[in-house]
Every structure is written in C-alpha cells, then in structure tokens.
Amino acid sequence: MRPTCAALFIACILSLFAFCCFADSGAIVKGTVRSGDGGPASGIPVIAYGKNMRNETVLGEAVTDSRGTYRIRYQAAHAVDLVVKAQGSNDQTLAESSVVANAGKDVTLNLTIPAQSKRLKQVPQHPSVPTRPQW
Image (cartoon, rainbow, N blue to C red):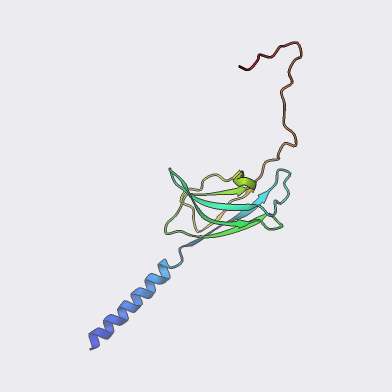
C-alpha cells in the first residue's frame, strides 16, 4: 500500500507543477490611440490579431477610454505574430500597427489615426481642353 501512496503523491506534485508552469498562457497587448492632431482618440474599437502567411485570427478586442488607452488580454498556446488595428465604422481600418513577430506576454503598441481630409481634392479641368465622350 505504501508504494501506491508514494506514486499518488508524486503524481499530484507533478500535476501541480505542470499546472503552475503551463496554466498561465495569457498575454496582454496595450497602448494608446491618438488622432492626427496628437489628442487621445476615445471610443475607438481596437482589435488584436494573430497573423500568419494566409490569414488573421482575432485574439481579442477593446474600446479606447477617454485617454485613448486600450488593454486586450488574450490566450495563446505559443508566441504569435501580433498586429493591432483601430477600426472605424463599416469595419474600416483607421490605423494599423506593424507586425510584432513572436510577441511576448506584455506588448505595448501605440497607434495614430492619420488626419482625414475634410474635402475631396478634385483635379481642375482646363476649359479649352475638350473632354472625350464616354462610349
């Protein structure tokens, strides 16, 4: 009976060791999103993606607070190639980070949304140049 108890004890210790070492596979990506004028961009959805050669997988998402900061926790069994995108309406990407290869457990990625043009630029047409009809 004694060897069975010892074997059970060793099995419990090894299981506890494995749980402690491998249970926390969580990672965090955080940062600040700023508008083109340098001010904080609040209320902006930010999505973290794991990227490979063929596709991107959503790892997690958050919305920026009043200071433009975000924090996304995600689970990964191994290091991922990480990219973060600030999304606008209709899933339009407003800003995108560069890819962080084999991202660690705690990564900071700041984004800046470029200033948007208030009006469309139109090429002026010279009045003496006739336009060709579209057939």
